[in-house]
Length: 222
Ligand SMILES: [Mg+2]
Image (cartoon, rainbow, N blue to C red; front, top):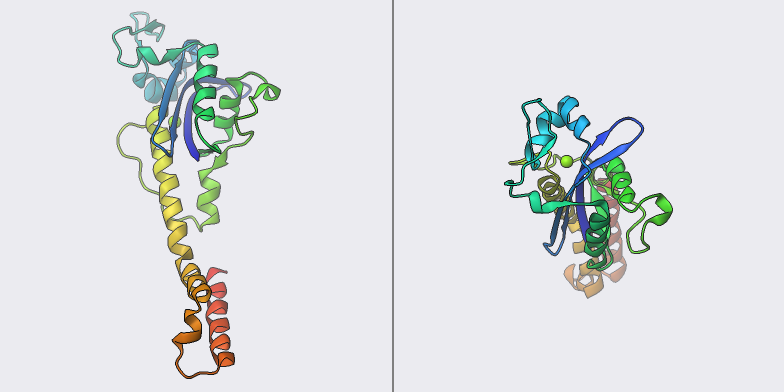
């Protein structure tokens, strides 16, 4: 089962510093957690984080013009977890997912940030996949169809994870549509329908007909 996830993080160029994580599984379960060890200075000084990420977090601007205070009235205050708690929550979420597959959007940095919740690479629990599938790789494999636009809140890890699921569902559907002619042909073949479908033709003629259709499908796919 697929788990779509997204991280908000500060990237110093050397270190990926976790801010928050959102996860959405194909069965509808969701997880949202915010790091209790927020990189305050980065939230304050990094223009993008300050403008786009910090407003969604349970922190408030102080008179000193910094994000150094927790906003205890904020609805997401209960989502703030220490690393050990976050490790437990993420581990359980993945463990509760049969045959988990991780998916993210431009997910290379997200995978590192996710793995670092558990410490160094070697400490990743056995049940947590060692790689993240990238929705961009999927989109490219399928010929780069136009992806659905993200509606509503952005740069909030849970909302972004939900949008990743929308992209994943879209691509799955898109691939099914692409494969439909091939599948129809295979079903026809398996059911023996092709033998009956062309009237009085010899079976050699019917087989030749089928080969032409299969060849056309291959040419279309190329
Ligand atoms: Mg995001």
